[in-house]
Length: 412
Image (cartoon, rainbow, N blue to C red; front, side, top):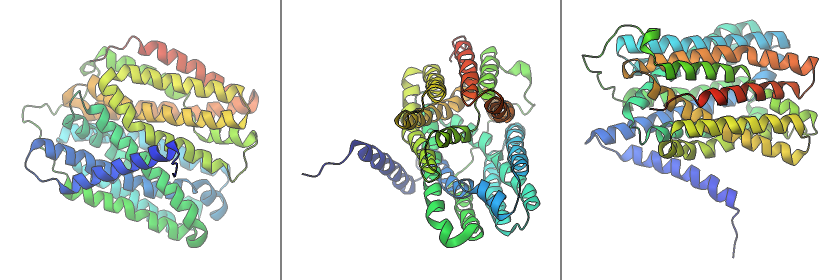
């Protein structure tokens, strides 16, 4: 009798459930509001999957392309990536604000996906690293889709299924990233950077078409305000959660530090990308379960668990050098991403006033994004000046502070 390993059952079972979700999506008709809501969320999940396939076909080889193919130094690479992170933070706040004011959401989502697609064509035809700067701005400006899309999902969801819906989006993101990395690894040597990047533009274009033709934007009630968001519109709980999330973001340095830590502790160059896949797959497999768990137990409890998982990762990377333990820490880190990335948006959307959901989501993503900018810089300085464990210890203390503050946030 053949025996199938339990991890294989989980992985293929989860992928199978997503395929079934897509099959159901394509068979739905327009007979009920509930059907349209389900179709919209699943269309967003499909578009998100496709976009991340294309994005991670590039991101997994991006540093090598910039430095070896175009001859940039590490300072230039850092500048380009830092500029991109800044654009992401600003674009999400601007699009959230404008979508609330204009009472339009879908147009920002479609344009966002097209920006990502066009930027990849730009990467493919760039001959010097300076050409990448406007393309990187265009690429990261594509994040204007995030806050309006998340606001639509929040509006279409109830308290009982909001976590599940955001979990489906995160699972699609992470599955797309996994597929993109595998495609990049398998096709790069055959196609080369430029053909690979042109190929990576196709999935996002398909995603934009899906949203344009499969999502019907419901007109917002005429009575809803079109004035801009002000601080007094936000509850004390939202502001406290924003503050503690900013503190946490200051310690949420790039996953590159985890990979470098593994490399310094004996993992070869060939196995380090496998660790990237390990936490991506862990995040993919856990996103939907954590979303459903937050529907049952509440957002705050799952967020507390997410902080605890990150704290365990920091402690593990700071203390242990054993290969098996390090692999375990990457799995725990992936579980942290699956919990945190899924539930934080659902929580913010519930703490925010309904009239200003896109604005509140955009502000949250902007503030945490801007706070994350110096996180990797500080981590690098601590790494160089004090030691490899210092960034993890620093982040651990910030995580403890954020966890204590979260206890005082009241969940709606």
